[in-house]
Image (cartoon, rainbow, N blue to C red; front, top):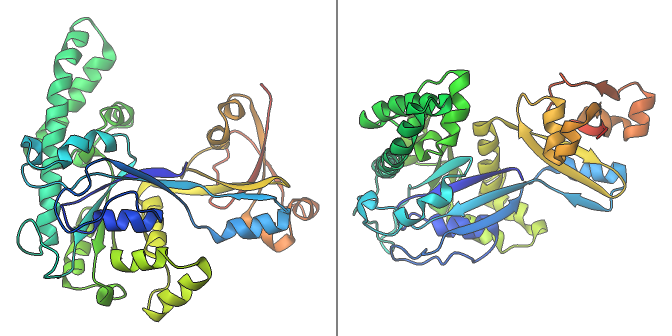
Length: 365
């Protein structure tokens, strides 16, 4: 698995249309009325990576297995969702375990598609979403406190640590700031993650524009990009309408279709790249006659942790990692020639895995 992300937004911003297009399914009903998505939708897509095909061709692999991205789409949030308005708040629990949250913002005019607020204002919509997520986080923290206080009184050190973190988070939420704005020590990061706060997760803005603005953006996307820069995150411009058309085309026709619209790549590629950057993720590969496969790990992962992405036994019994840089693997023509050229390295437990590494793990359990 690569990573999973929750898709949130107001009704009628193109959330379900985007979900359908990105997952190339019609699992989510897309219609011009609020709350058309009444069940959480989950879809997985293969992460495009041209390196996979090249490695597989050299290794003579029977199968190619890409890493995957999982999207979780929930009903549209509206102002007052935390107090029972609309349907979106019923499904927030479905995105608490996601690695990141993608805010889909409407940046297009269309008189035939109503907007629940009566006008197009993506920054206002982002504030509405953020507020509802913060209110949901406050409710979640309040529910945890009684149990944590009882544990703390009995001397539970972990409970005491979490209470300290919650106090800082509540200060931020009360001030109208998301949980991710709280400065944490290294020791606090793991307990913080266990709180599964919606506003504690990295956030990415997706600007849904008309076909005419897909290549250049518009005044609204400029506003969103400026906000994203201040928040040290990213904004991606896509057109859900175009993505829907691309999803219906055979792969060999997609590039030409996008090129005619002045687009170098599909929106999915841009979203995945932005998501990897946001979460600090990289890809390494394993290759052999049976399969070439992509694996996702965090940037800064050492060799044993990366081995554990394949199987826990690989990490537990890690001995070493035979490693070839992607460029060396492709340029030299595979493992045997890389070995002969002295470009296959024996890396130990302290090795920091690099994006594109082709690896074979030695272990003993």
